[in-house]
Length: 155
Image (cartoon, rainbow, N blue to C red; front, side, top):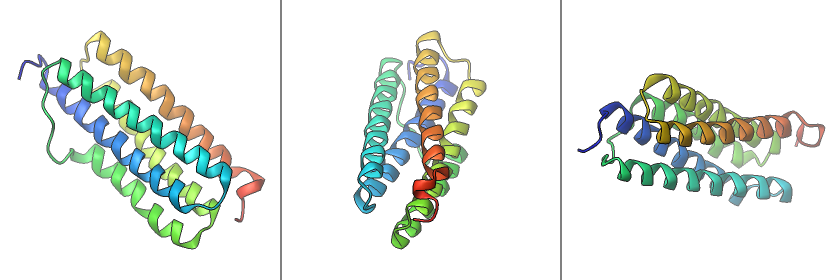
């Protein structure tokens, strides 16, 4: 591997898995909710996470990194955050779906924070991760705002 820092490769792999989990979670939510606004929001965030993952994969490739294995604890925490989404969708309650999406976002926000603190990232990689972290934080705030809104309080 040409990557000068093995830790950078691990961070990129964990964030790629974070983004792919979010992409899948939001796509599932968009497909199964009935509310048009939520379909648009979830579709937007699914597309956003797909783009983030692709960008991180490209950066990993540029650095000579390799695809990782199981993803470790960061990915495991995120996956647990999205698992309950499927059961919330069976109730078709918008508030429950938003609450589970927020739980997934909580894990994603933490994974990006950990990534920025855990590794000596080169400037280009750090810039990508910081920009994406801001987008993830914005998504978290939007999902929380929707969850707390009167419109979805008991739906």
